[in-house]
Image (cartoon, rainbow, N blue to C red; front, side, top):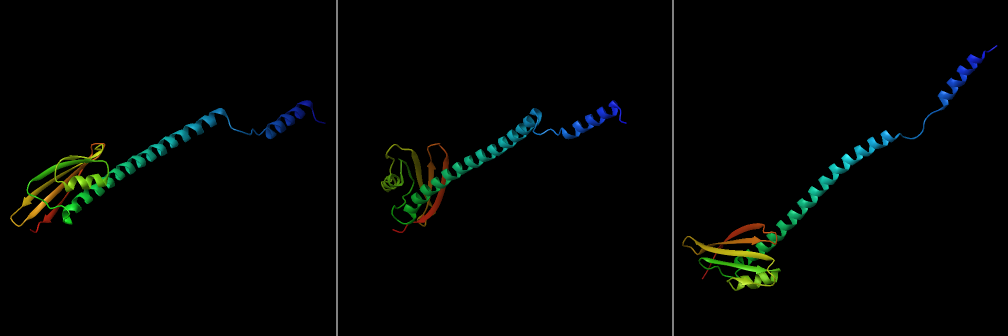
Length: 153
């Protein structure tokens, strides 16, 4: 015969085995949220860095386009370099820049978001001119390029 004590011990063991807790505790949830927030901060700072880098690259490409167009006007012969030219053109778009450069003097076209300064100097005695262009964008970032142009009279 089974005593009441033995019966109670079996009943307690049976209830402990079947009482599997399902779900998560508050501490587990908070730990998971802390880990996820740290990961999110790391990923978001990485993405912000990429966006800033892309914006800077776009500004550099834009300035290169303006500088190349300005210097191409001298290289192709549209504008002939003179000795000790130094002028600044303020402009909003490429057409205003080209018009300003063709006058070979300081001009202020449109609102003047951008500025390009052209300087030419005679290098040696063989009609070889150094044409330097310095571009300044709306954020006052400066970019420069130069070419050498042989002027044939």
